[in-house]
Amino acid sequence: MASTDQCKNCEESFDVSFDYCPHCGQETADNLTFGVLFRNTISNYFCIDARFFKSFIPLMIKPGILAKRFVDGKRLLYLHPAQFYLFISVVFFFIFSFTVRKADNAVSNALKQSLNKEMSLGSLPQIDSVGVETVKKALKKSQVHSRMSDEEISTIDSVITSTQKIPATSLRLQTKVLDSLIINGASQAQKLRAMGKKEDASVFITKIYVQLLKVYEQKGGGIINTLYDTIPITMFFMLPLFALLLKLFYGTRKMFAHHLVFSFYFFTFLFTTFCILILANTFVDLPIWFEVLVFLSFIIYLTLALRTFYQSHWLSAFFKANFISFIYMLIVLPLAMVGVIFVSFMLY
Image 1: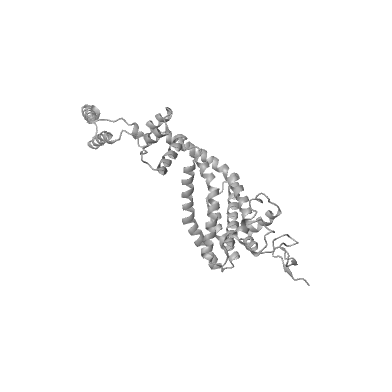
Image 2: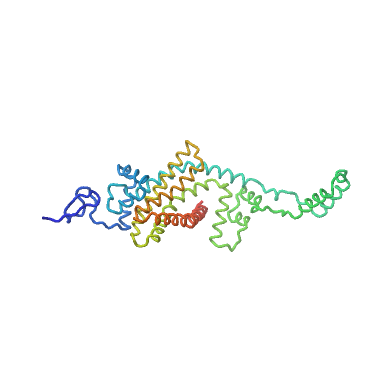
């Protein structure tokens, strides 16, 4: 009698010589490596079938169960974790784009008003010492001066005298000079010199000046859209960092690919929740306390998911969930945001 093996996905028996299960088609070898995890992800990107609905409910109400079943071998019953994450992230950023457009218009208008507004200090008339003394003598001879107290006279004297200390040049990169150069079609080098760039400036510093000039000339229009376009790529790099934190906290209990599986499903849950919040906010003005409560629920979800996936104790899962969230929110996320802002500025 030929020896048989059992499929980890459909649990049907088949001959050990088979490379694939004849019942469900899953590969018999259980080698969950980094390469296997990402195999066919791009080609199957939009192949959303009944597995999506089989995966969605467990994802939302059974934290960690999808990741555990996928690592245990049940990989055809549910949507691939990377495919699930990519699909939900596309939906999220599509919905979020409408909010970004409103924010970009508001920020662009604010920047235009700020950049078009002349600095009051730069437009104040300058009075020399002779002019100051003339004004003081005129005040003393006038009837108004005789009706003023000593304190009021001292205040006016200090205000008049202080006008001598106001610099004649603008405090905003000599905006009048720069505006005139832009209107007259001056070269970029001339405009950069007006902004204060030195001739021996490095390539990096020159690029900073060029980007500042671009922001000034375009009045900041579209800067939020550029920031928005950078976030999806950044999030894809932040996900492995989350998996690395899991690796540090759980040691060698699982392979790095297993931590990635958990991270994909957890971030998919986060994006799904954000989608629901954004859609709900379009119809109902959700109170702040409710949104805070939802964000706190992420800690509870992560605790339950860690306990299920890593088979750890409740107390251990709770403390690790809080430590991981604390490190991620306090260190990883702020550094990522600084990077996003800087890259967005350089690509603007």
